[in-house]
Length: 345
Ligand SMILES: *[C@@H]1O[C@H](CO)[C@@H](O)[C@H](O)[C@H]1NC(C)=O
Ligand SMILES: *[C@@H]1O[C@H](CO)[C@@H](O)[C@H](O)[C@H]1NC(C)=O
Ligand SMILES: *[C@@H]1O[C@H](CO)[C@@H](O)[C@H](O)[C@H]1NC(C)=O
Ligand SMILES: *[C@@H]1O[C@H](CO)[C@@H](O)[C@H](O)[C@H]1NC(C)=O
Image (cartoon, rainbow, N blue to C red; front, side, top):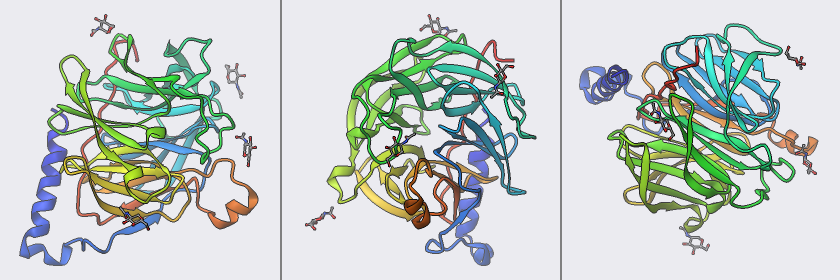
């Protein structure tokens, strides 16, 4: 299994942090640092760490870019996709120059190795996820341990503005897409399909339909890719926080890191006790999503939205739309997966 070396490295890292020999290297739990690592773009979303190349992919939804950060150099390269909003991008198993993305209503195969900017990247439509008549588009997605791509949809925004979640309700769904590119609706209806995460045992799935303010958990049958027994493991309305839950990831100890859209923080939630464990402030308005990355998977990358801000708002939050790196959290993430696809090369 590909994930083993990373979990191993992470365990060694955490172990050594407790060993007196390495005292000087101990990341101080309270010396969490937050660093802006890209320019400010539009609606930056969907961070996904590619452990094969040690790069961070993310999307700039309405500007229709797939972007790639090389943390070693700080260089961001971008590929323009001439096919409508680009909601999420994932790597493809067995390839180094192919990506699969949600764009408009479709699943597309993009040919890009990320080394150079592309003004109009080559792509082909693999399959349509939603009927052409629907007033919906693809949104967040993630690949499970078995290589299936889970891709959600949502109603098109009324005005596209982050902060008013005025989308028509219950027009979206969460789809499971397998290696033969056939999709099945697994959760429906939803309003804004967003954060997804599986626990390490791969028997629980966590899911966010943003306007519900809630994180739901399901029993997950990893053989079939099916869900059952929905329950609510966190509800933002039971805290005094405003905003809505957006992108999400899980750490090695099974806690959930959740971007709070409309606000400037990421929250850490224990889904077993429903406790809010931590809040990490990000110096930009409207946090959109999170992913662990870095060689040890111990850096939390956070995307934010700088989309459609007024000049006045922009002045107040000049870094909105940037990606931030949160370090010294003292915890590692779980490696991401690449989409297994029979006809994506
Ligand atoms: C991108 O390329 C396609 C195919 O060659 C072309 O139809 C389209 O007009 C191009 N778009 C832009 C923005 O250059
Ligand atoms: C941008 O925001 C304004 C409100 O400030 C809204 O009227 C407009 O429709 C938005 N534009 C887009 C493209 O979302
Ligand atoms: C892919 O999904 C379709 C639709 O659910 C199913 O009929 C097909 O057997 C699946 N193919 C594989 C290889 O799992
Ligand atoms: C929320 O605010 C109210 C009123 O200020 C306070 O009584 C309550 O304890 C707060 N709840 C939480 C979870 O902080």
